[in-house]
Length: 107
Image (cartoon, rainbow, N blue to C red; front, side, top):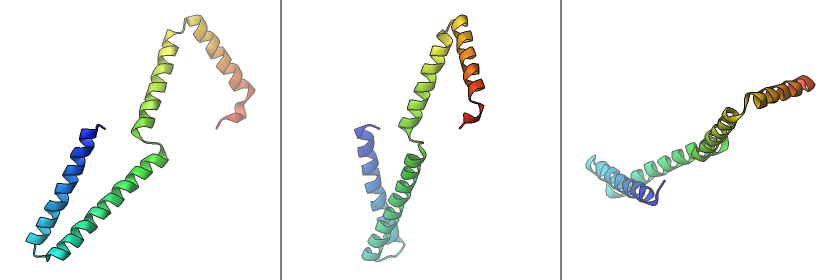
């Protein structure tokens, strides 16, 4: 995310809070009550966003993690495609030998 995007989101949240305050005032709340309710709703929104962010962090579903996994898979696929038939056969034989030696070590 670029800095301008972050600034745009910040300005958008600022104006959304002000708009929420105005709407609450138009619905008949006193200025103090409208301010308290708009701040409360904003805080609940931030806590909700934080909860989803922490869930993505601890579950490993962050954009960076996904990009890294995709890159590693692409590199491995490219290396596999570049193998000669003889190298591929040797690799398959090695994998089969490892599987035969340790059948109970699967995670």
